[in-house]
Length: 163
Ligand SMILES: NC(=O)c1ccc[n+]([C@@H]2O[C@H](COP(=O)([O-])OP(=O)(O)OC[C@H]3O[C@@H](n4cnc5c(N)ncnc54)[C@H](OP(=O)(O)O)[C@@H]3O)[C@@H](O)[C@H]2O)c1
Image (cartoon, rainbow, N blue to C red; front, side, top):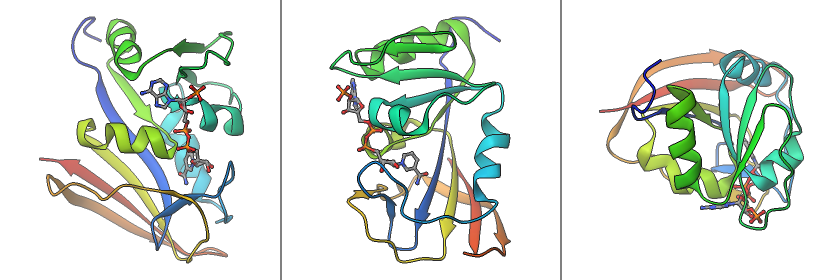
């Protein structure tokens, strides 16, 4: 780990075919097995999330959270740091880690998609109703890996790399 070097940002998300990622506070589908990808990828990692996602996800063991909130409604606790802006979160993360995973929700994905190096994307084979959408993947990303999974709802796991 190089303290003070820019933190490498990855992003992880599951979307429906139509780009929906959430409905209110919830994810409007359940694809069995898909969340294991999230659990594996985030084990012992720093996770950067917005306050709404943090409140709906709760604190998973063996993860460290950087939560952004302007309202100040999140209380810091063990393994949970709270920041009033994305910039202050990134500045602090640079001092303590070399990698963080942006894990939602919609506001954080829109704010940071152009700054991440790697995007882990699951596309669930469902047309979902919801009010939270994932942004378009910028042209600067290219698909470097894809694997199809069969489940109650099939999904494709893709890795996109910013060139
Ligand atoms: N499908 C998936 O993979 C996935 C993953 C994660 C989440 N989700 C879904 O995404 C939805 C939540 O997304 P959302 O867009 O409504 O909310 P969000 O991005 O999780 O959180 C938004 C909140 O974060 C804080 N915030 C955002 N930008 C900030 C900034 N620049 N500086 C400081 N604070 C900032 C604000 O908190 P305050 O209001 O406290 O100021 C804001 O209200 C839910 O439906 C959830 O289920 C889906």
